[in-house]
Length: 128
Length: 128
DNA sequence: CCCAGACATAGACGGCTGTCAATAGCTAGG
DNA sequence: CCTAGCTATTGACAGCCGTCTATGTCTGGG
Image 1 (cartoon, rainbow over the protein chains, first blue to last red):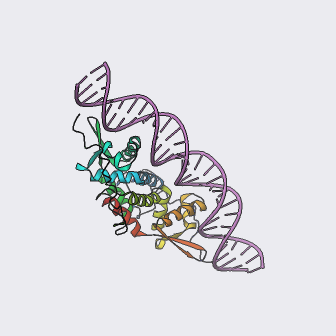
Image 2: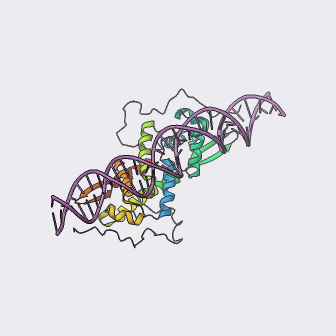
Image 3: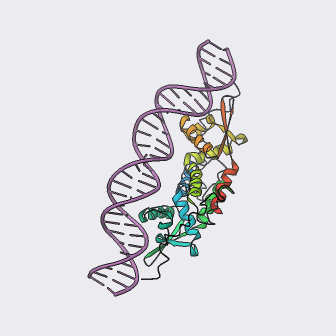
């Protein structure tokens, strides 16, 4: 047999880097490159990434970003994307729930704004 | 009616920033914050993000990163994640297809390695 | 030549997701 | 009030996704 690349060693559950409550909320995200991600950290980061990993939602973020004052209401967003208003509202809700947008209802309109720091956090988690 | 926030203007399809073939492959990714993403750019970036937006694949990336020499074979990855070998192979293929991993078959083993620049590109596209 | 082992592929299946039409809730004006 | 308009919610449906089992493919050793 050739020099097996240390196969198996299934008795070393090293994925439990944060087994207890240690350091789970210290920074918010362990940079991907430092040490093997635990299950919870990976799930949380994946949750945020899933919110961004959609063409429509990416375009929504950029549209809001580019709009006057960095904010936009639903009625500004349906036309350029060619989708119905409920669909846009749905995507905006996903982004708000992920902490990537803030919602500010003024009168009849709901103004959405990009949370820069959230995007920065995601980017930082990827590059380390 | 209150001062309507410039509703509609559906006749200005500004989403076609790269309507022709202009500047589509110049940089690879328009930073999210510069101008409204076109449909194609959004789809491509979303495709890459979808590859990362999964807990298992995030852990795979970090495991490979943390392994000796920055590379690992399938047999090193199944145990710590508690998934079957075909599932791991499937995820690795997704990551390779997205350009986030390279595959190097040496003898019987297939060694995977993280493409740093790909992750950096994604991060750069998010922060601008 | 055959076997063992590492990895990939195919097929199946439950669950999630993006979209729409229809409807409900809210706010401002008359 | 009553109405008009902006937004959110609900329900439905097609399509994709992550996982598994079973099987195929290739490599190295005896």
